[in-house]
Amino acid sequence: KLGLSKLSHITLRVSLKGKYEDVEIDGKSILEERNDATKSKINHNTFTSSNHGVKTPRISILKKIKRKFQLKGGDATTNRGDKYGMENNSTILTPSDAALKVGVVPTLEASKETWQRAYKFNRFMLRWLHYWDRCQPTDSKLALACLWWKAIAGNDSESPVYDYQLSYDLLPPITRWIVHRRFSKFYPRLHHANVEIRTAYLDNSVSNLVANLTKLKYNSFNATILTPANTQKSNDISEKSVHGRKKIRLIVMGGGYDTRSFKLLEQSLLKNGTNPHQSLLQRSRQKKFPRRLFQRQKTHTKVNNSAFDKLSNCNYDLECYELDLPEVVHAKSQLLKKRLSRRRQWLSETQNYPKLIAVDFNNLNQTRAALEDVLHNALGEETNVDTIILFEGVMIYLDPGIPHSLLSLCSDVLGRNKQGNCFLCFADRLENIPGGDEDMARLEMENTGWELMDWLSKPGLARHMGVARLKI
Image (cartoon, rainbow, N blue to C red; front, side):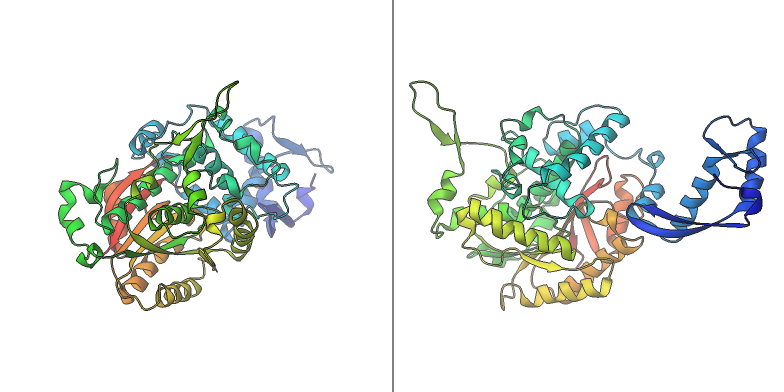
């Protein structure tokens, strides 16, 4: 309760999303708004002054706090979320259409309140799911929540994002059973299904690129670069990739706790056959049926529609780099060392994979130095190395103007240090594209040094998905 008539300035220390800001509010301007509001007979959402008993609309102060906070910068996601409102989303596909495009089951048709309640419940449960976790990974920018969502989808053997329990093996041993493959199908298709759409798109896009680079041509649901209409673009790929094992470099910008690099690695190990734990790796690809009374346990190789299973005949050597915030890099290194390498023994032979690099993308100079260092040191002195840069749900957390500059920076660094074909795969939110218009996306790509090859939109924050190649 404030005596507004006696205060010319009010200084409040506000906490919004973990950030503290000192906000100054002019009491006289609030009194003027009060006089206008009382004429409209505001009878709710008010508080009473202890000195004069006048009713002052509370919404006036909250609006000023929000306006002051956003003018100082505030949270990047709040600013960008306000910029891209729902009124601009007429060109975005519906959840059902986007899911059908990538071959997954559509999300549940539920109200906005249901989605919000599910999100709050997920946030509440994360603290208890990791209460006994010795690694204690940080949930920077929803990275930990996405790991659980991807574990639910990755345990579904009928989904194209089926990962043979890779994400599941990163979870704490005491509580991970709640997303076991026996229970994953019972979860309502809300947030994990929305993440499954972009995961399926990126998995298929990356596998299509790898297959094309190794000259194994097959068609997929969105293999735009392999369709007859794009044969000329496909034939532009260097003919040096025909002979021998292809060298591929994967650079993940904001990898979080994603396991896509290990999906590619396990497929490469299956084809290579030199791993000392090769039999264990092959056995992990088999599905075990529950033993019934007086019957032997039967096993057989499970045939599924996982995107990376299509690379079983591809010969390639893989080098992977993941760039993210220092706290995420530290947490992921602990998870890989203490969990994944122990639960999947065939991965214990791969030292320093993937290469984790701490970087803040809002610092463009630091990002440029990290990318140049990757290109100079990757795969020794090889001169014919194809590069795939991948963005997944990272631009939505960057400061305004950074996503556009980051795409330009990537194209510039790759153009100066070009060693082979360069591609960009993304499931994120591009700047200057309020909705899902493909023409605007093509223009944005051209302005940043890329040529758009495939495009798909979906609801949600990371609503823009596509594949592009470096402009020649």
